[in-house]
Amino acid sequence: MQFETISSISTPVGEGAIAIVRLSGEDAVEIADRLYRGAKKLSEVDSHTINYGHIIDPKTKETVEEVMCAVMRAPRTYTREDIVEINCHGGIHTVNRVLQLTLSHGARMAEPGEFTKRAFLNGRVDLSQAEAVMDFIRSKTDQASKVANQQVQGRLKTYIENLRQSILNILAQVEVNIDYPEYDDVEEATTAFLLEEAQTVEKEIEKLLKSSAEGRILREGLSTVIVGKPNVGKSSLLNYLIQDNKAIVTDVAGTTRDILEEYVNVNGIPLKLVDTAGIRETDDVVEKIGVERSREALKDAELILYVMNNNEEITKEDIELLETIDDKKVIGIINKLDLENHLDVDYLTSHFDIPLIRTSIINGQGVDDLENEIQRMFFDGSISSADSTYVSNNRHIHLLEQAKVSISDAISSAEIDVPVDIIQIDLIKTWELLGEVIGEDVSEQLIDQLFSQFCLGK
Ligand code: GDP
Ligand code: ZN
Image (cartoon, rainbow, N blue to C red):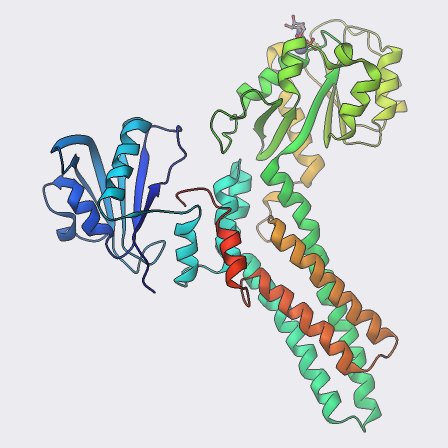
C-alpha cells in the first residue's frame, strides 16, 4: 500500500532529554534530506544506520539543531515503510521547529496512532498486537509493559485462534449431524461432543475475562488509600514508598501534579495512591473529614493500608474503622516498632482477619515486608508467571463478554435439545466475535476509531 509521508514528534512532549521527529512513508528519506546536512546524504547511507549531522532551515540556511538521524528502509521497519527518525536533544522549541520543517517540506502531520495504523494496514501487526502497542505506550510500570509486550508478541492472538479452531471443530461435527440426520446415535454423539467442547470454550473465555481485571489493575494502578490516626506515620510511609520505588511517569506531563493521586511501582504492581496530596497537606484524612466520610473515601479503595502506632493503645476509632473495612483488602501496619509497645497486637489478631506488618518507617524497617505482602495479596506471585495471558483492553473485554453470552446460549440450547442448525448460529457468532478481537472482519470505521485513540507519534 502507498500512503503520504507522515511526520510527528514521537517522544512524550516535555519528557526526557531526547525527542524524536519521526517520518514514515515513501518520501521520508527525501524529505529528511532536504533538511539534513551530514557527511553523506541520507539517501546514500545504508539502511538501519544512525547518522550524525545538522538540520538546517533551507530558506534561511540557519542551523536549527545538531541531530542523529536513523534511516530505516522498508520493509524491515515498524510501519513497513521507509522511516527516518531525527533525534534531537534540544528543548521542545527546537524539536517543534524540526517538525515544522518536515511539514513545510513535504510531510503531513501524523494523526494520533497513525504509525501503528500503518503497521496494521501494511500487515505488520494484527489488531490485538496494535492495541497492545497502545497499552504499551500507556502502561505505567515494568510489569504492565511486560504484559503489553506479551500481547505484542501475539500471545492473545494464539490463544484466541485456538478457541476459534475449537469452535470450527464443533461446527464441523454439527455439519456431520445435519448431513446424516437419520442416524440417531450420530445426533446424540454430536450433541454430547458439542456440549463438552462448547463448555471448554466458555471456560476459556471466562478465564480471559477474569484476567482482564488484573490487566486493568496493571494499567491503571491499584487504588490505594493510606489511613490511620494522626501522627502514626502515614506521610512517612507515603514518602518512603515514593522514594523506595520508582515514581511512575504518567502519560500527560504536568497534568497529574495537582490531582490527588500518586503512582508508585511496588514490586511491579502499580499503586495509585489516592488522595495523597490531601493526606500530605492536611496530614490526616481521618481527622480532617471525620470517621463517616473516611468510610466513604475507603469504599472505592482496592487496597487499604491501615497504619497504627505501636507506641499507643488502640482506640475506639481504630476499631470502628477496622470493622467497616474488614471485608476489604486491608493490610494493618504496626509502625514505630522502635518505640515501646503499648498496642494490643493480640487483640488485633483475634478480632481482625487481616495481615499485620510491623514497621519502623523512620529506619526503613519492615517496608520490604509490606511490599511483599502487597504483591502476595493481589497476585499470589502469579502475575509474573510466563504463561498467563492478560486481556488489558476494553474493546477486547467487551467482545469477550459478548462471545461468552453467545457460547452460553449455544450451551443452554444444546442442553434442551434445540435443533443443531439453530445452535450453529450462536457458535458462528462466537467465532466471529473472537475474530474481531484479533482484527478479522473489522470494519474500516472500527479501525479508524481504534487508532485515533493512540498517542500522537506512535
Ligand atoms: P502521619 O500524621 O500519620 O502522617 O504521621 P507522620 O508520617 O507525619 O509521622 C509523625 C511523626 O512520627 C513524625 O515525627 C515521624 O518522624 C514519626 N515517625 C514516623 N515513623 C516512625 C517510626 O517508625 N518510629 C518513630 N519513632 N517515629 C516515627
Ligand atoms: Zn501525615
